[in-house]
Length: 449
Image (cartoon, rainbow, N blue to C red; front, side, top):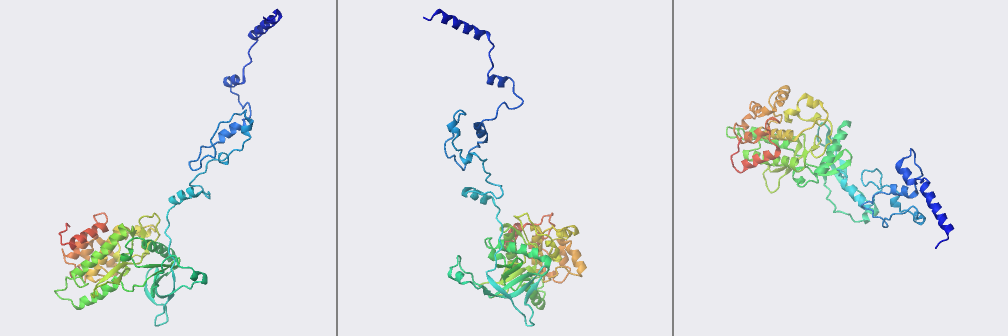
């Protein structure tokens, strides 16, 4: 029991609490009236919590995360892991970013694959003709092709002591060296070298494309020396056909027989279907002079051969957006599809050949292999150029000239070619469709025309 004085004192204190106004707490003041400016400096802990990033998927935290109390000074004194003092790294798209092995693998997977041109593995030396001038295989609008001998590159002592990483290739005795004929041809030949290098990596390229040995410099191309072309063969056969002309042979292609011409047609259309559908390349300048003839195997007939595509200076890859400008400026008009002979198209430096124009050019190449007329159309230069702009009428035009009897109406030559020379927007077949027509003829089955 407390003394009376103590009880009296306690009652006085209770009464003073009930009558005096309560001082609002800091929390009440903050909730009721937000200040115009911060009332206090943010604590160290609040800064750290704001800067703390979400954990990276590839970088686990070094220790479990724990909540810290601002009143625990010992916790604040601990060092913060470096991964929590910096924002997360961007794995892709940051220039000059240093990536760990996992990040580097992801970045490499996204990088585009560039076509690299192989450097020629041997030395070449241009040969001289009987007059002491550089020996030439042929010339074109952009380049000159020279005859050249080869010899192995000299290796240093250290290199000779190191075994090669890959099997040594056989050095050919003779090669063809293609050099730019003028300054503005440099980019054209650089582009051709890239396409040739790419084509060598496509399966079955050895069956359809002239072998490519690499470049000596950026714009000097080294190829297998194949001096005989389809143009040479047609010219030779045309002379022989003229000597043996008779009513019995007048309807036969100059190659010697319809069967031999049809065999050539199957070879060339198969090659074109491969170029478009497997290699995804448009040649752009198909004509007899750009198809080389490699001797056939296992046959003594001089018509037995394997045609190979050459001269890709007007070519484009279908799977790439970039194009080489001015590739149509050097085409041969008689073999060019009529849709490309429009003046507006020819003036546009970005205009390029198409798969449809390749089909047309191949059809005219085969037509010439039947008629023997390398100029395609009869008449003067102006007449031929005018007829070329109406190329869809080529079968009718050639019948009025020399060799026209070798393309009889409703004959094999006409039936194989007529859908390949239609207007591009009027049903001209693709290379694959054309191959189907040719193979159907080969089986002896009727074809719907």
